Length: 283
Length: 353
Image (tube, one colour):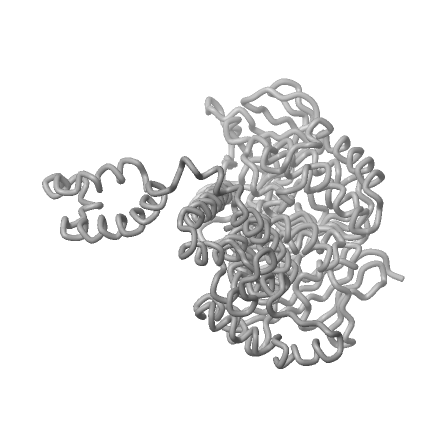
């Protein structure tokens, strides 16, 4: 929103008598719920910041609760992001470029984890990969591999909920990219794989980065699927969000400190995305 | 084995059929000329393999590249064909140098050798100092030259140019056009160029193939086509008298004989162009008129078009003149008659050759 328009929204009432600015003529009745909505979104965060035990914060941050949880969260969210990139970019490529029967169906399926309650995702993962699960029983019987309640399970749960963000962002970037660059690469002797690697991928890099950042943010905040599929073992599966939830009963100041860390990470993610979206040309 | 290009292009898409025969020998520059939507670019894309044929064949140096009947299709990346696109399509994430090196890298040349050859090519097109620039920081003329170097470095047997100069402004266009002409003269393969600019076609091409609605309507050298246009479109489009000569100040001695005076001074080899509508015809030598160029010639042909009559005059120089039917009657313009032609210096355009 341009600054001038932002200012005119704030002047609300006066707009009515100034027909020159009637383009942004917003009825005052709308401003009340709008302000309420803004307060609703901002005030909780404000409360978090205001009620934070700032004096004891450093001690909390380096206490036994925060350190391991933060490390586990960062490692598992990073691993999930890498897996999403390795598997999600090719899926996005297929969705954006291939034409096959049922493509729309596949696309709809990809977005299911976006709307599915994460807990349901966790239950579904248990039923597939649990010790008695569809695939899990064979993993257990043949390889002695038990996924649930391990760090691997955390990564799997986070990948499950975060993958759609990456696929949708990359698919959008691929659709927006000028395909004639690929024609140009072909006339210069580039195979399809080389064209993708050396031309298409660099062109959609801003979209991929945006997708990866969103993906990472979603994985970092994952709670429902993780606690259902991976449980809450300190240092193994107890990620930041789970630690926050548990600490709230036993050690509220620690919970607030943990929350603040997550808030800072989220704001950082948002800021990095904003930069991408301003400078990125393909998203 | 036949050297060069032999193509019968048949492409059928919804509501559009392209049926075009195109032959060209190595070293030849053929221009596909036609109105928008005539299928010129589709023809070029079919030659590159970006659009598969639905009928016909493409044969280059005796090798079949596309023949739907025999189920032969060589994919674009395996054809010895390079293309300069209308807006160049330089890869925005690569430097000028790496853009030029791209075609060698795809063919397995290691980075160091590819780059050193690319540097030589940039040198050849006069962009030695711009090697590290991204395409976004190149001017239109520079980008065109990078695109040409990027295409030629692969030593293609067929070079395709899609409106190679249309993205340039008028002043850059002149110099880039004469540079392009020089590079095409050095190039040993076959060139097929698409353009809707008659001047580009006449200066750059040895042969014109005029395409309208997906079909060839006329083939010939630029002067043949201009002299005897078969359709109204060609007549209007190629309504251009074009001569080469040597300039000394505002005076140009034409290679085919005759003198033309310009407004702006030039030096050395130039092209001089003026439209037939700028040529006036007179029974007597015009006196006291502001036209600085007058010469006599004999009428060798008259061709009726919708609103004008195109008169072909043989003389020094030979020229085409568009006059009204009333003027034809009034001046009794008939083949064999001696007339005076006049062109104002302000109506002439000169370009460095």
